[in-house]
Image (cartoon, rainbow, N blue to C red):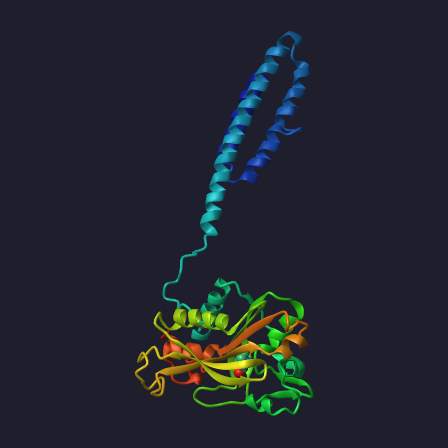
Length: 337
Ligand code: PHE
């Protein structure tokens, strides 16, 4: 029996060494060490061993079994590592950057919009956009522009259906905001707006950013302070801001706001058409009627509002002469920014 054990151990060791995969090794193991494997078969022969020799024989068999088990696990680890290494090599993906691929960038309108929003958010303004297809109520009536009123001519509007239009100003979102949020209010509404205008400085689609602040004791001074910081931040530290009286149905009093020309510093040039000033936005103290319509008591609260074209600001910052250039998506033009 001892010889048989030695022979089995030798055969098994040879098969362990030549097993080429973990699954092959596993079937060798089952064949030798399994419940009805060759070693168990051999143990059946113990019956024929004289009783006094059985303990010694049992010891030999057990030693052989544990030696084989150790060999199985050593070979198993070897095969496992090898199979893993082979798989990693076969499934390797090259994730390095293809440096020749063209890299995208933000459109100048998007990056200017982002800078503008960041500026107001840094001063604590909330941001809200509303629907581009609006109702007459939010775009006009709630803003003190009744039906058939001549003030409607200020904005040549695209109507879709009775009472439905493409919003001509993001002031519409401000009404929606005031319906939901009660003062103190400090918000901006950036977004796309539509008007039937088409020339070097006007496009039927453009972008506005309007601001609204409503609280107790808000005055024209607060408006001037914010716009002063805004102008200095975007057009340079020595930029001056000037208010000119104007008219908007939703603000009273209303102003048109100019900034000193960053190109000529007031001397007069092509950009400012020789005036030394560039008109950038409309603003004013929110009309009492608008506050009341939105459920805010105008005897308790006052507010200011302002609105400008993001496209216009982008054009001034980048000295772009024609608004259409922003919409043609000619990469030769866009690559410059
Ligand atoms: N909504 C005005 C426009 O589009 C701009 C504006 C906003 C004026 C807020 C005054 C106050 O022309």
